[in-house]
Length: 210
Image 1 (tube, rainbow, N blue to C red):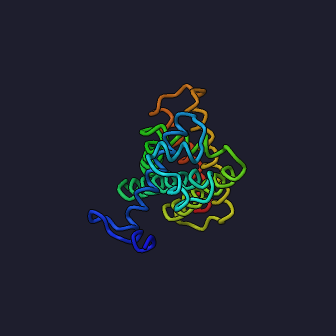
Image 2 (cartoon, helix red, strand yellow):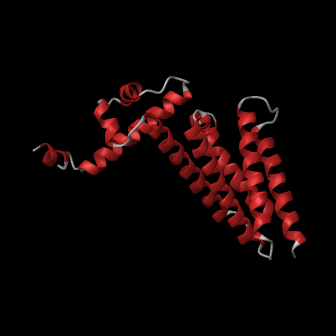
Image 3 (cartoon, rainbow, N blue to C red):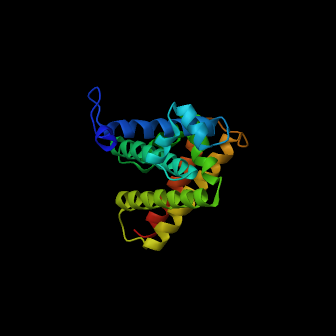
């Protein structure tokens, strides 16, 4: 009977939809707790989400799983925002770079909780640091693919990959420093400076192999 009840639809909401809603509530709770620099425990997460602890384990196996899922959610938001910006910006290297960087930074600064989760909580444990490193590499691959598609030419892939990982790694560290208040730039100045570096390295490499 318990298994059958778990599959029932209540108020037009299926069991799968209810589970997805509970998972989202737990991720939102994790975002709140990380932003508040509060200790992250299963009990605390469930209390914040207004859920019984047993619901945590229907979606996650251990405490760090919710942080990993949260980092993935933020990364997906960043990817979607950047893709939309690139798709709608004119075909000019500076305009496209500025639009993509502005869109990505907006995701993190419009909701400062996301910046704290992505750039600070993502370094909390060896496992999360490894996850963050994989995310940086994924965004570097995105930058490399977009750059190759935009510039064309016959640039060696290893040079494209090097500049992409250099740019994304540098952007991550720069943004972390800026958010900590250790870089005296306005948001607009920050985006302009990062754009300058992206365009400089992209245009330079393309010019060498034309």
